[in-house]
Structure formats: C-alpha cells, structure tokens
Length: 359
Image (cartoon, rainbow, N blue to C red; front, top):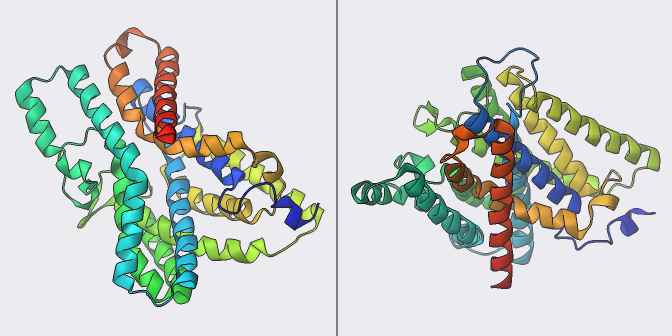
C-alpha cells in the first residue's frame, strides 16, 4: 500500500491514531486522580516500587504539546488563506473560536462540579453564595493568571493555561511564523523547561508559585511552544515515503515509547523523569500525524475517533465524580471506588457528548 492509499481512509482533519493517543493519555490522568484522591499518594518517590498511576499526570504533557501542534497547523492555514489580515483581529478571532469550542464542556461541568460540591459538603446558603462569588475567576478561566479564589472544577486549570498561553503566542507566531516555529518556539520552550528542571526537578504541581507565575503556566506555555515546532517537523515527515522496514521500526518505537511511559507512570520513580514525557509526546504526535508507522491502518476508525473526542468531557467530568464518591468513599475499597469513579465519569461524558451532538 503506498502512502496515498494509506491516508485515504479518513479526512485530513481527523487522525485516528492521534485521537486514540488522546484517549490513552486522558485515561492516564483519570487513574492518576483516582490514585491521588482515592488511594493516597506514596510517602516518597525515587525508588522502583509499583504504585497505581502515581505519575499519570504526565498525560497532560501530551495535551499541551498537542494544543501547540494544532495551533501551528491552524495558523499556517489562516496565513495561506488570508495573509494580509490584521494581526490583532486574527488573534482575537482565534481566541474567541477556542473559547466557543470549549465553553459548552467547561460551563456544564463547572455547574455540575459546583452542585455536587455543595451537596457533598452540605454547604449552607451563606457559604454557597460566598463560594459562588469567589468562583467567578475560575468560571471565566482566568484563575491561573493569579486570580485565585474558589474553583469548583479544579481540573479546569488546564483550559486556563492553554487559552492564555495561546492568546499570548498567537500574534507573534502569526507575524513571524517561520522564524517563530522553527527557532523561537523550540528555543524558548527548551529554555523554560530547563528552568523548571533546574528549580523544581519536576513538571507537575499545578498551584506551585514561581515568581509572578504558577509553575503550571510555564509548563503549559513551554509545551505549547514545543508542540508548534513539532508541527513543522511533522509536515516535513509527512512528505516522506519510507520503506516498509522503516515503517515497522517506527511502529516498534511507538510501542516502546508507550511501554516505557507506562512503566514510569506505574512506578515510584523520581519526578525528574517527568520531563521525558515531552519528547515522548512529540515523537508520538509526529509519527502519528505523518503516518510514518503502520498503526494508523488500525486506528483510523470511528471508535478511535469517538474515544478521542470523548477525552475532554472525560477529563472535565472527573471533579464532579470525585465529589459524588466522596460522600461514601470511606466505606468502600479503593478498587470499588475507582470502578465507580470511572463509571460515573464515562456516564457523564457520554451523556454530554450525546446531548451536545444532537443539539
């Protein structure tokens, strides 16, 4: 099968392998939250002791890299379609498009998380009103800019970081696209990641402060930049037509990367190895987008695409599920709590996906 045939099973805008990766990394985050909130974190890191998804949070690295990757693709298309457009107008238009795309899932699960938190904590009216007022920054997704208050759906921090990192990056990338994605983005991304490694020795830690920023803001900003650079590499690779032997080697490398990530996620190794999740995400994304391996033949189907589209609702539903489970979690085992947590999350995500699709 030649490369053209290999790409003909799906539309150019849909890549089943990438959607499947989205789902797998989303599951990593989901089970990390089960470990953190239902099992409890280990006493220390630095050994090779098996532990349930102790490093599952690195799934977010893939999502940030992916955000930068597809931002660069969108930007390049916009430049080809309307190169003379005012940069300010184009930046605002891009930002509003991103806001509209995530607003439904954010608003729905923000409200559900707030209601479930009120019920699980047995809040009185005075506390409910106070919490509602203090949750305005989180509702507007500006909490990661420093407007710390009450955040009923804490996991929306990812959306806050993603949105405002993109908003800052977009105008510069549009003005100087080639030099930005090929020189500035990878250099600045590596510089920021190096700073985080030197100062903290880890990527995770959402609300950790570093100067005037939260650590996670720098984390997301750097990985979005890295993702933009990865897109240009993927575009170059997509025009290659390697021999079958090379495709098989790349496919084996894909599996090896996922296995090594899985081993790290499931063991109490040092947090400094979180940084390897960034190049791993880049490699997986480039090879999936450019279809250099053979996995796309099996992943380009409606099931994988659906699972990928379900990833954001699954992520956003987790806080509500944890609030519901917190009412009786002490009476159940960790295994049963985790099963109920996953079932609750997927039920809400499926309901949201079904209802919004019909509407």
